[in-house]
Amino acid sequence: MTFVVTENCIKCKYTDCVEVCPVDCFYEGPNFLVIHPDECIDCALCEPECPAEAIFSEDELPEGQEEFIALNAELAEVWPNISEKQDPPADAEEWDGKPGKRQHLER
Ligand code: SF4
Ligand code: F3S
Image (tube, rainbow, N blue to C red; front, top):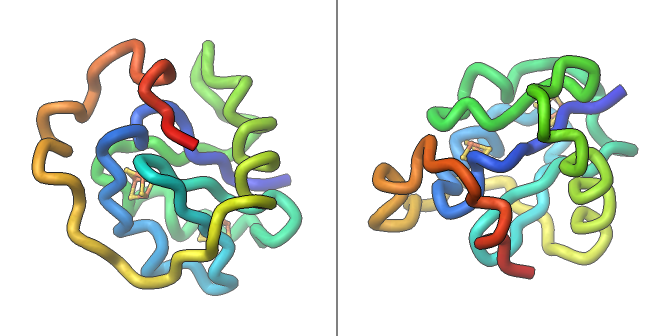
């Protein structure tokens, strides 16, 4: 079992999540974060910290977010680790909750 970062993180990237993770299993891309499924210990601490409500347990994913299980696993292998909060993008609030952000994921 693992937690998964889903679509609404894209272009919001608030990074509050990384501060509470006891095993530092977040990895950072240009405009999205992912969780390494083999490192996550399922503690659930990060889920309520995300202002964009983008983090879910893999067995409670909202409909349409299933592809993010594989995307988290894939990108956690290639992106660098992140364990300190950063400033979000200046337009993060504008993007929060916008539909169809999947197409904006940068690798
Ligand atoms: Fe880290 Fe716990 Fe969130 Fe997994 S559930 S990513 S271990 S804070
Ligand atoms: Fe993304 Fe939420 Fe973390 S927007 S960077 S999952 S706090």
